[in-house]
Image (cartoon, rainbow, N blue to C red; front, side, top):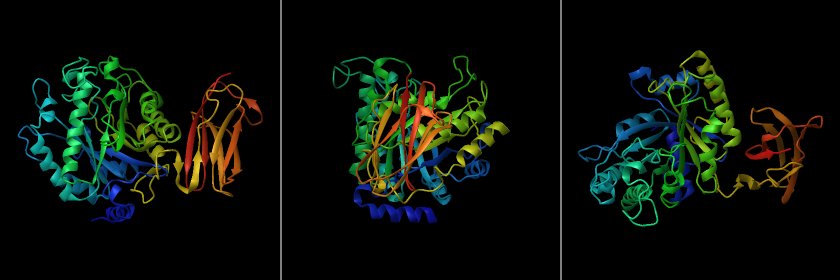
Length: 434
């Protein structure tokens, strides 16, 4: 067993039984993660090749595996072992290619797959190392058999509650059944990911991702998937990382769960991919602080998603991921809770008024004497103004009047207030309207 996994198991044991076996959530920073297919189809690269290109180790490796037609338990132990030997955590995207009548997910809901699920769960339990399982991802799309569109869609009265759309209801019931079967055999080493796509297909009210949420008691991490297809498709256009994820991120920040980008990438055609990558990792750090793992989809498939599709793309990725905010190893310091309270007694509350057109107040609490550095930045990462304040052991207030040095008023738009102590960073979004 590798040094990193040994350290992780020791940390998990110290956290107590409620967290035993699950991957710790970093108090500060975000795990560097990737899908690195271990074959050469389409010019893809494996784990070692990806790390050599990135010039940085990954903490989490994602891969895909489907449910077999013969329903024989097939936990991918060999692949998980190989990832652990690389001192990373496996992220298994477990795709339920299932059959049921009259809808695919009816096969799970009716218990047809119970013996398969329980056998798989026992194998995971015996493996006894931490891993992620992402089951039924992108359920708000119409491209997978487990998607809501293919399981009753927006019809009412065909399953359970007659006031709820049948497609989301069936997905929720199947997700919960899988999780509860794992719980029934005592599996504690899985961090469960629920992961919608950033856009819904069809884009109808019943098919919005929040309608598929199966509940806090069965979800450990909220995943978000999204891509910049550029002009690689007849229907697509160039979209920034911020615009790709801003809406779906905001839907779930009220939930007490860490988030991850389950998979993302940019096409090469239609814009500057290198700049897109640099902006993506910067914006993720500054604007989406709840994202604690981010997974690049490294393959030449529908279009060339690879980090080395061009030299410019590769240099952009290397520069972006060199930021120490992106973690190569599983942490030994975890988030204490998701209520806004951060380690060391440091907390930043919501700004008010926000949006604002005069000045904005941001309350914060830091231990007495603790130095707090404050920066106001625009979404391009340029500093507008900065300040330093001392913690008082009680609530303090930082006021910004929409000006930058030397007193010049800024333009209307989105700004970031970044509060830093030596160990913790917290970012708040501010909308300035003149």
